[in-house]
Structures are given as C-alpha cells and as structure tokens.
Length: 196
Image 1 (cartoon, rainbow, N blue to C red):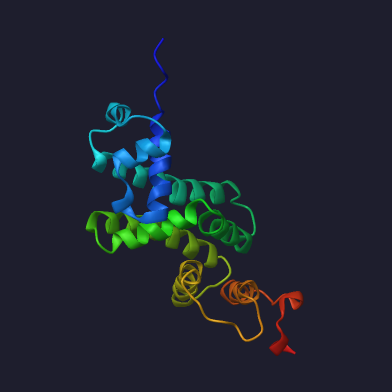
Image 2 (cartoon, rainbow, N blue to C red):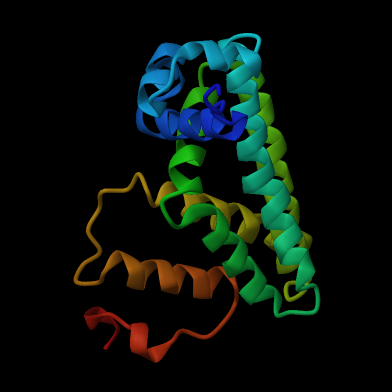
C-alpha cells in the first residue's frame, strides 16, 4: 500500500508560512518538502513549477484577505457600519495568520509588478468596503475618502512604527485613532495620562 500524498493545500499553506517569515525568495520546493517531511516529487503532481505554487499562494491570500473578509462583513449587512469596519480590520490585520502574509505580499509587490497588481486589486476591494461603510455615517465624499485612507494606513502602518506614545500604550492610541476615523465618542476608560 502506497503512502498518502501530501495534499495540495499543505504545500500552499507551508509556502505562505515561509513567505511570511522570509519573503518570496525563501519559498523553495526542496525547502518546503523538507519542512513538510516529504520528498519534492509529490509537489509536481500539483504544480508545474515554483511559479505555479507562488500563484496558488497569492490566490489563497487574496481569497482569505479580500473575498472571505468582504463576504463575512456583507453577511451582517444590517449591522452597525462602525462595528463592521472594526470586524474587517480584525479579520485582516490582527492575529498571526493574515497580517504577516499581508505584510510580506506588500514587500514582495515592491519588486514584482504582477504581485503589485494583485495587491492593488485586493487593496481596492478593501478601500471600496471602507468607503461604503464610512459613507453610511459621513456624507462628504472627500471626507469618506480621507477617513478610508487614514483607516487603511493606520491598520498597515502601525506595525512598522517604533515610536512611543507619551505615557499611552499603542493600544490606547489605536483605539482613539479608531474613534476619530469612525466618528464616535472617545471611551473614557481608554484615556491616557495626558488627557486629564
């Protein structure tokens, strides 16, 4: 009786882990096979070459980071738009799964035009969702666009920021930034020492 083949999804999943840890150059068939504890021969039953794997990895990332997030938010169409924006951000940029992959794809897109186009498509879907949700409580289209941009930049950029926050935690500052973007009153429990 022959041994079971390593499922295609495991190759893609391991490739995404390696991408998040070391970038696209670290995604090598032989190294993935070793990490999976299999021979690389099974790889070619699913993928013509490394480029096919990289494409499948991007397909998985796009499906999870855009399609599934938008679908999940749309399932709760009658929900509070502010809560739905927060949900979309949490699904995409918190946790150990999508955020590191997203950041790795962003870095990869700086050097690969096809990846940059894919990232542009995903980011446009995310911005479209933000515009739609923010537009439910903000009537000015210019302000909707600005708030959407700020929300997106905060979600991505705060991971790269090394600054201190004058006696406040990063979580407190992010919470207040969210209040400003979403036009909601500040939570008095999240006020820092300089707020009085």
